[in-house]
Amino acid sequence: MLQRRNILWGLAGGAALSATLARPGWTQSPFHSTRIVVETRGDGPDLILIPGLASTSAVWSRTAARLSERRRLHLVSVRGFGELSAGANADGAIMSAVAAEVRRYIAEARLTRPAIIGHSMGGQVALRVAADEPGRVGRVMTVDASPFFPALISPGATVGDVEPIAQVAYQAVQFLGDEGLRQRGRALGLELGGAADAVFGSMGWQGGDRRVLAQALYEVMTVDLRHRLPDVTAPVTVVYGWSRDEASPRARADSLFRGAYASLPRPAVFERIEGAEHMVMIDQPSRFLAAVERFLA
Image (cartoon, rainbow, N blue to C red; front, top):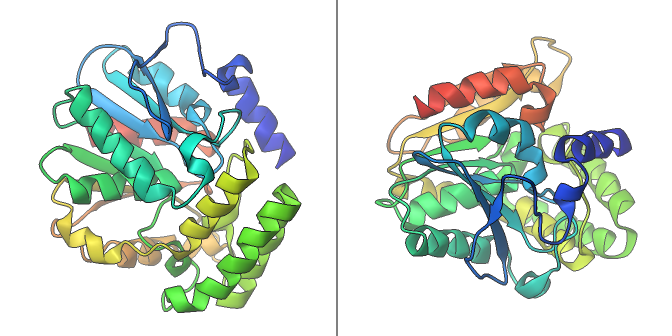
């Protein structure tokens, strides 16, 4: 975990994780929000990128560098992750409120049917935005994200199965921080009968406010958006890590992700990235960028 964090700091140039996320060539949007911060760069069709749990826009550094010459990028960071102050995310539900702010940003910035790429928790946020505003989103890519994450560990899992584990995970992060997250990640895999890498492994952990981390983790474990998929009319591409090694939990990824998105009204495009785990854009950057290019074509 420490090694992955160091990689992220290197990609971001260290200073990218400051409270304002100011970076050369990037502009912090004048959009005022107590939930999110948005950086913009480039010119062309609009593309919004949303990171996952405990990550900031730094995880998109390589992707953004390649795309900013041809796209107008909007990099979202959730307050309370990394070095950003928690703001309104310190209390109450997070993901639904963040999705509402992304929708408000799209409206106030007058974006025309932007594409959205969301990693992990950010993928769930992207699905919410697309379901709530079916006419305002051009297309969606989820990166190692599921409408119900526990189903990637055990397809028959229910919110009721996960709720007691999620409550313990919430308390663990509140009081134990990083180590609490790692402990509960392993426990979730064991208790649901599978490996937990798809949910917790290699998260690109940049830390943050423990109140926000604990609540966001609780939501990642318990939110089930499968009933909202019929409302998503935009084309959806699903990117995920895969392994040909039958001993790896990733060998089962094809069927798990296809099952997770089965209720979309328009069949999704599935892009498996061999050799990647949860942080697909960092684990296999070239293969990931190729998938993004196909998604945007």
